[in-house]
Image (cartoon, rainbow, N blue to C red; front, top):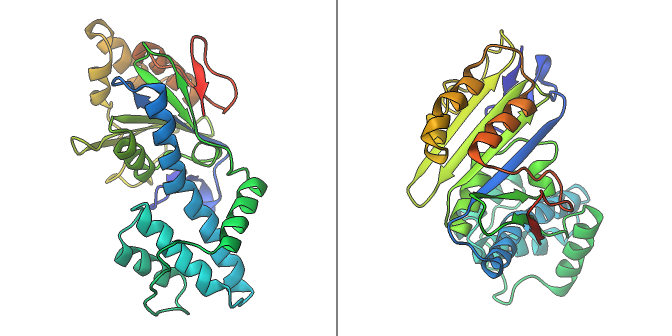
Length: 279
């Protein structure tokens, strides 16, 4: 029996083990976004999402070693989260205190930001973990959707709605994502934060696929996709989703993307035909 975890982080199989290989594919709606704007927004996304991952790794490392430097890293993390509005300051403290209960005092981070040694540590950790690479977008001026790729977001994972929301807020446009779980399950997520809209749908190939959060994923056809294809293709798109034939999830996704006019990017080096990489 296959399940999707409550925190929407990955697909699971019997006993809670990670289910095979997962891959996520993100697409940003082209509403007259230009290369210079894209590069600026990519940097904002990296600052808001990638660097907190480094801070968390540092915090865990120092906590385990009971290092006195933990507090300085703790303060720097709060400063970063507050500056980039990843979380409001009070929520940032609440989040950190929940995870690191040994330190429950109110910190007042230095206004100039993290000390130099922390910045150096972050830079070193980014390189070691491959996080120094920028997220990339495949750009084509006339494309309906820009494929988006970021290693930690896409490889070995599924699209999480919070990441779609962050992308939608930063770029100011709708964001769509497909996720493939071990070829057996296709997930589709969408959000338009400007209009406060979001959808999550799941299409399993397994007949006894039963246990997943129905409050998060619906198994009905994602009819919102009809807004993004020609009227003549509505029936065909629905047939691809609703087919009871065993179809590999990635093949179902490919067939749907063809109708939607979407090109797929699965790495940060090779752009689809007619596109160029912006990093």
